[in-house]
Length: 93
Image 1: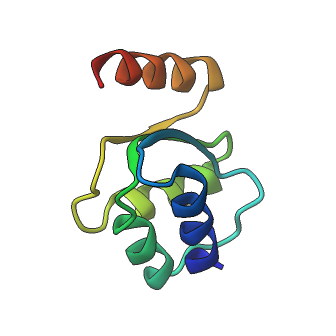
Image 2: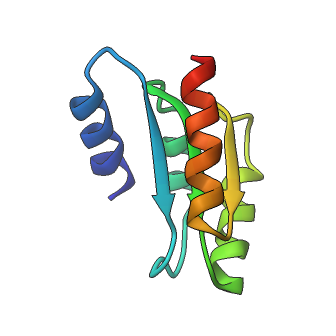
């Protein structure tokens, strides 16, 4: 599933880079393999990871705690803050 999602992102963004709001709600688990796939996606300028539950926070910590990510990535518990951060990243790009 992670490879298919990464391929979809690459297909949708083409050669350009983009900003992503990654919503974790409903995710029950994330494997090391999936974390590796997401950590190698090169078509993203920034990723705001959004979660609202304690489980979301644990999954986000696992996602963000791996190898150095290829773009700025940050966890948020409120969508307006996540979108504002992405907008600031857009103006810097």
